[in-house]
Amino acid sequence: MEAFKDKQDSNKWSNREGLKGWLNPTRYGWERLSYWLMRLTGLFLLLYFVGHVYETSNLVGGLDAWNAMLELTQTTYGHIFLILVIGTSTFHSINGIRLIFAETARGLGKPGRPDYPYEAGSLNNIQRSGIWVALILAAAAMLYGSSVLFGGE
Image 1 (cartoon, rainbow, N blue to C red):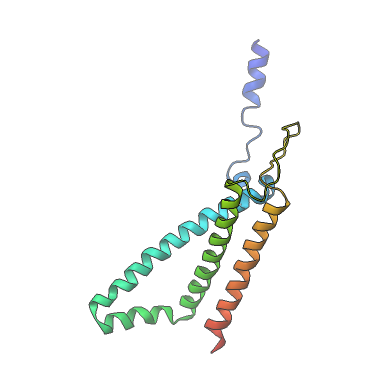
Image 2: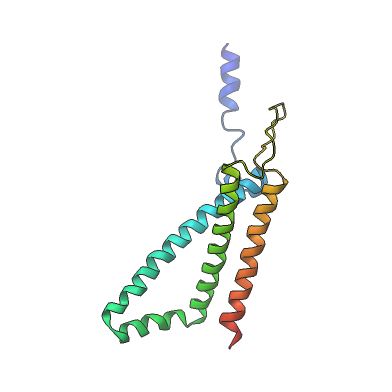
């Protein structure tokens, strides 16, 4: 019994990669990458929303305060930030629609018998293509936004 306990203690941390393994997208696949992108885009959009409310509240300070705040968005960094807002909002909304379909079991097919080796039925080809569609549409929206914002310069 003591030898078994020693073996358990020695293997306790051998399967842990730490933060490096936690951030490794190939370890968990596309579903985990989609999960993290959804969380990160949600946080980014929350920060944008708070900043947007602050920017809009400058209307109370008069036309000069409003114009001073708008000058921040008319810089190169302001345009890049707006392009990121376009991309994150597009990905977040398209991936959210994909998740709604997954939660309501539309596009997943019939449930199968859980035989070993267990494969996640939630990430079939339809769901995987939904992740790709969200990424491609976000990239296309960012390209269009950059052509509008930087096209006149």
